[in-house]
Amino acid sequence: MINLILIRHGQSQWNLENRFTGWYDADLTSKGIEEAKKAGLLIKNTGIKFNYAFTSFQKRAIKTLDNVIETSNLKISKIEKAWQLNERHYGGLQGLNKEETAKKHGEEQVMIWRRSYDTPPPPLDRNHPDHPVNSEIYKSIDPTLIPDTESLKDTYDRAVPYFEKNIEPLIKKGENILISAHGNSLRALCKKIFEISDNMIIKLEIPTGNPIHIELEENLSLISYRYLDQDRAKEIIVKK
Image (cartoon, rainbow, N blue to C red; front, top):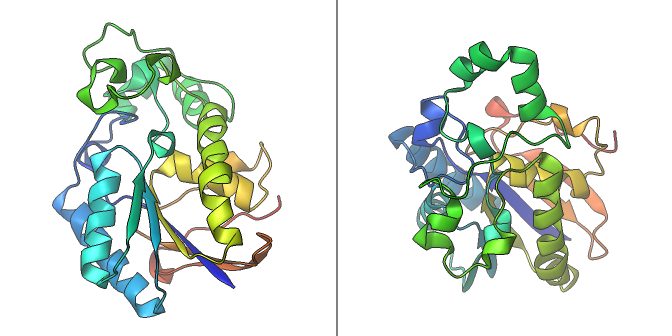
């Protein structure tokens, strides 16, 4: 039996402000740090040991992982940061307040941008100072790979191949894996792991700072799955 733990970062400043965050490098709030520390205690209580952890290029996920490791006293020798595990790029919506955007464009249109599987928001101009091509964080990345906007499908198409190439082989070798990432990159991974349909994936919600513990066979077959904090658990959709 192999253990895979997925954790969405703790609350960020832009989560608190109800803004579309995307690839903007928002920091954790004090509540977000508390959520990460609580997640660390929950993981510690499982008694699971990890040699490998993965996170994105974004500090809210990195700091969540740091706090989890510190609180749980985990000794993880190999930590990989991958831009492919970044949050979905919200394009021209990035930085906008969600409620104000709904008033401007209509709730139906905004919900299509937010929750449809394959409809991206309007793109962010590459000359915009907040476009990731203009950030030092991504200077090592081929700019042609950096998106202007993304649907969940686009996020799936970068996150899942990374998972298949870099993480699945470790699971098949019996390694326990910890991944600290984002709502939409984790939704993409859950779509694959739990075999969720295009229609049902829009209903999957992942709360901040609540680890999902997945037990797998070495052939990647599911054994069990649960949120470690049942008080804040959401439905885990499987094979629907």
